[in-house]
Amino acid sequence: QLQLVETGGGLVQPGGSLRLSCAAVGETLDFYAIGWFRQAPGKEREGVSCISSGDDTTGYADSVKGRFTISRDNAKNTVYLQMNNLKPEDTGVYYCAPKWYYCSGSGPPTVNSFLDIWGQGTLVNVSS
Image 1: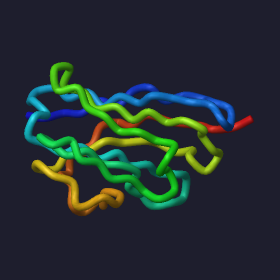
Image 2: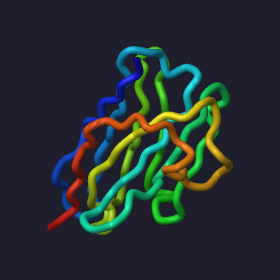
Image 3: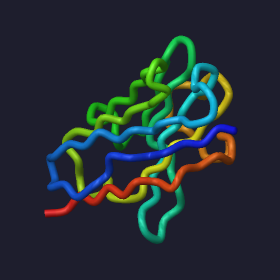
Image 4: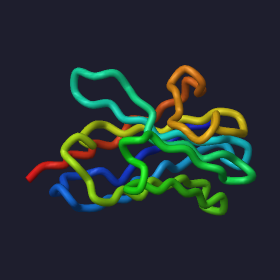
């Protein structure tokens, strides 16, 4: 049974960088697209980025384009989110989730189109 474990969050100053990891346990990620989502206090979970299986096509929310980069290493069964030039509005708990094969276009992932398999999340706090 697939489980996902998110790590890499922390406290960082504005303009700083973090790299988040989404590690799969129990199954290979080879046939899954993986989406990153975040949830700020008092707000709904929103899609940040997605990477497809096979051709590794990607999608991003407009708010993170040019700052965040999603990638995957199937040998390590892990998907990464490199976050640069972080802003206070990037603060929140970051989660990853799977869906079969492909992201939906080049835009951000949507919660309802992903399988209901969520890790515990990792907290990103961007603050001076």
